[in-house]
Amino acid sequence: MGTKLMHRNERGFTLIELLIAIALAGLVTAGITYAINQLLTINTRASNHMVCVRQVQQAGKEVSKDALQAQQVTYTGSPFHLNLTWTDWGGLVNNITYTINGTQLLRSEGGDSRVIAEYIDSDRTKCEPVGTLQGGGTLAFTVTAAVGTESETRIYEVEPRPG
Image (cartoon, rainbow, N blue to C red; front, side):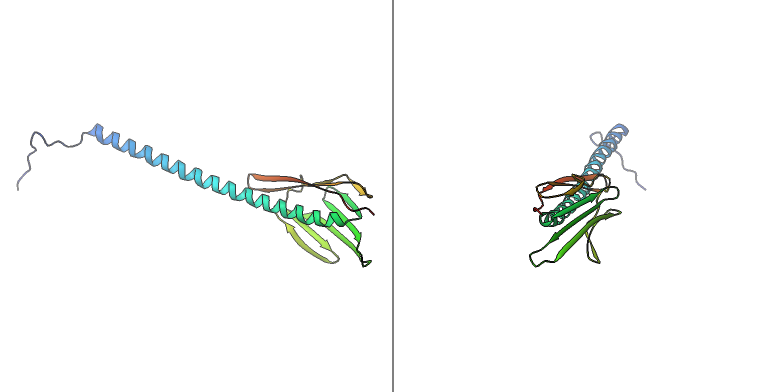
């Protein structure tokens, strides 16, 4: 069988050239892998933060809506327990209670209870001033939601209607 002879102007790659090419390919691959990892991490964090924002907004909306009508507001902390009471124009007495069960903010009216928001941090969710508000006071509802390493805290200030 014939062997192919290399002519003078035909050269192959040297070992050093191959090693440099492999090293460069490794660097490019590492850079691409790092960029993809960062993109996925940022996307997850942004998604978690948006969940926190939505949950805090939902909690603030519901509590504010009821607190605006309340004639009597009673709050006890540890565990979170907010009681709002008012009499409507028809003479019907409304008694709404907000509690935190695990990481869920619950709204109870009569015998019915429903989840208002999730991922609520019970240690950082509170109402001020503590006690009963009698006309003219302001209720500051601080709510925090946490998902993964992300969290969102908002303060809603509501002036309940006078008794």
